[in-house]
Length: 176
Image (cartoon, rainbow, N blue to C red; front, side, top):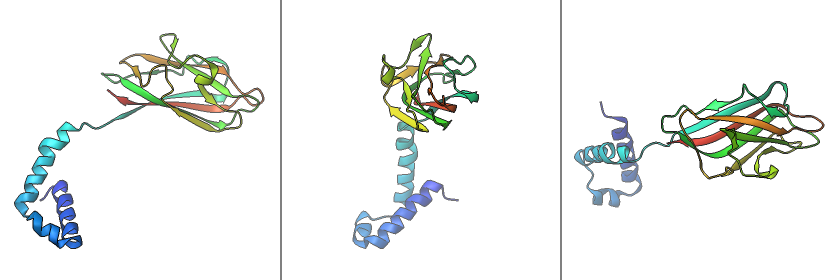
């Protein structure tokens, strides 16, 4: 039974034959050519292009109710990737948006922030909004986390009217 790659390449060749018969004839397509192309794809292209695997670290804040200021000791993540990961994006969302003021959260590794200095550089969910995201927002971009290192969220500010309810923070990166 032919492989999926063989069938895919054959489909493309038949499409080419239908769309441009002159090019099809010039290529002199034969079953041997298709088999050789499948072998090239298997032997050369596939091993030389490793897949990019995304890694996500998710924190749940205020899961039992409103979010509160301070470190949530039960909401931390540990890197389980043997070679670590590089973080490049954060996202924040809430079931109930903060009102009166923004939610501001810092993420710490070994007691030090992985985000730049300044309130505007922390993870911010603006008042009245349910979600926000930012690319390349770390102290170094991308930010590397190594195997067995822990990331801990610290809530710096909550909404002054409604603090925010069931807040989720997701850090996204790629496996090294």
